[in-house]
Amino acid sequence: MPLVADQTAAALIQHARACAARSLLEHEAYALAAEIGIATPTHVVAESPGAVTAGLLASVPGDLVVVKALAHDLPHKSARGAVRIVARQPEVVRAAAAAMQAALADIAVAGFLIAEYVQHSEQVGSQLLLGLRNTPDLGPVVTVGPGGVHTEVLARALDGGRASAVFAPRMQASEGIARQLQVRTVGRMASDAHRPGSTLAVADIADLVQRLLAFAESDMAQGIDELEFNPVVRGPRGAIALDALVRLAARDAEDPTPAAPRPLHKLDALLRPKTVAIIGVSTSMNPGRVILENMLASRGSATSPGSGVIPQCRICPIVSICASSAWRHLTSLLSSMRSCIMTAPIASWS
Image (cartoon, rainbow, N blue to C red; front, side, top):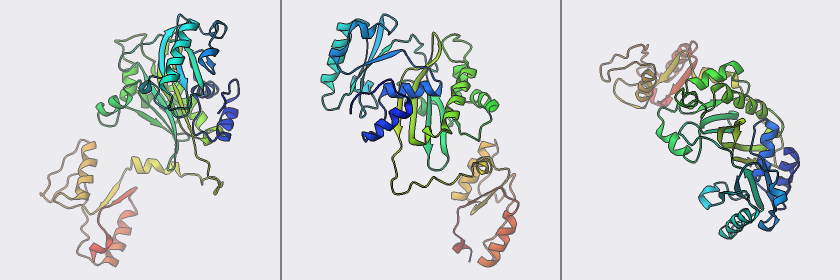
């Protein structure tokens, strides 16, 4: 696939599809970031090590540069030695690119990205992951979480599923983004007062989220399966994405019909219901009781298994009535419920 530069993101996506590629090269992902309004390092591209000249490097600021191999089958460049920080000298950059090309003989290397080295903090919490994924159930979802090379380790180590913040278009009021970030670990780490100047402010992160949410509703975003900026750091000029990954959605030639609008307005009742009916709860421990225990624990409540009494709950026995009567009874009960969880088959009621 030939190396293409200086085109709009839409044209680059179209070119990638024409070449049967399922991802963008990183300089192409940088072009997409620019259209979204997310800053990336100043950079140039070289098709081969021999194409690196003093004239090419003249537009890249600083004494150091980051050299990256460009390939569609190389999502984790660091693990393959496809990222190097070297002096901004033509012969040094050429040598680094040539060494990468030799080490990646099993991959079709399209060229090399040569970017400015951005000074930034390496402390935990100073690097963020900003992502967009088109999901089959909820549509586009934007995620903000701990970033850097230790993203997965941090996500596992931080407790309770509160490390990251998740947003979706048409569900999140702009003024609520900052509030959501402030109660998540990623937001608290970002606003750590003990590290002034090394982390992004919550307002800066909220601005990035708003830009990605706005892009998520564009026509161009519909052709993207996943977009990830990692890490996003605070550089001398503000928030900047150092790495970018864009995976394209598979084209379904058999069914070009657009998906029906999702009833996203109903999600709040599912995720934060005011009332819930759980069918199949026992006084002893069973699947229904486990679900109930977890729901009450999240509210700071506790129960006493085996006591026959469940605090803060209305218990309606239905096992002693026939299936038809049970269904009428259940229908009447659920008319006032916002959500229902069934853990026992209806056949077991007869």
